[in-house]
Length: 151
Image 1 (spheres, rainbow, N blue to C red):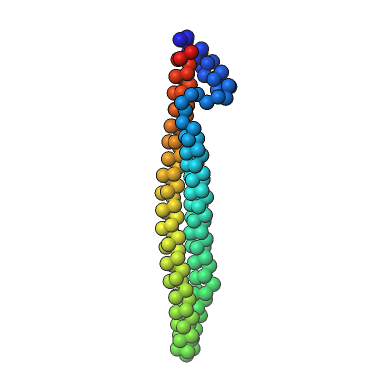
Image 2 (image 1 turned 180 degrees about the horizontal axis):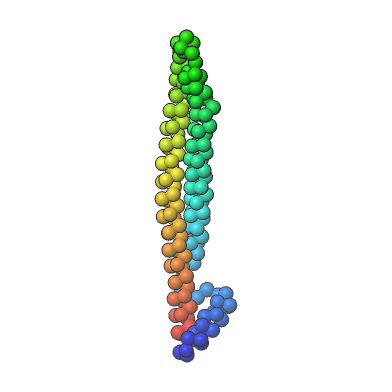
């Protein structure tokens, strides 16, 4: 066998032929492709879930400033004579808003947990796809080196 330049030239020629080396497992590219597709799907799902979490937080701020804060401000700035009459109305409104907020809080907490789990799954799938791609590349290089050494 010659020096490193000869080996490099032989590898380039073998790649240019486009024929897979004998004995190569053809299932590997499908596994690599499937792992990549899974990683991309989980990446998109993770981004969508975290965007929903951020949107939920923004909705909470908007709902507070639109519905709850004005009621509290109305109650705080009312004269003592009208506070008693307003307190029942404000309390009923706050109770209805509070129930809706409680349901929203549970849904938001579920979204946060789902986004966190999806993030972990994405990291694991990405790692698996990378390792499968490395394994496929190493197997291909090994087959090419074996074919060159047999020549």
